[in-house]
Length: 179
Image (cartoon, rainbow, N blue to C red):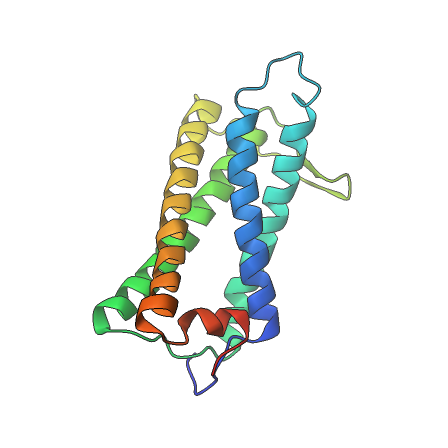
């Protein structure tokens, strides 16, 4: 839904920046975790936090998608190519996030145990649904995470290009400082 609003509303901005922080943090922790030795004090703790934040990010992402469809958003600025590219990048990022959430779930629950989310609640486990589930889902999770980071990086570069070169309101809209 696009209207004449000048900036994204506060909930949309908070969800955007919180998602960005979570995605970057989860990516960094994910890269760090795979190299932990069995004897590291973080060997069991880091995956718990990674899974917990991942589940909360999945919930936040569903909220973002719902919010995006029930509230007005500012018009996307730029050439026709830039508008199409921006909309495509957003769609691909959401698709990649869904892929990451599902593959992470399949990795974490292949043994039948649920996912404890900060010991607040448990997401039930699916068990092993197909042969080699953890390995296949792990590969998908890895490559989808790299892809979302690369596209998010392009997204950030595009926002900076709009701000510093085009001198338009694209970045200001997400900062709540639109002219």
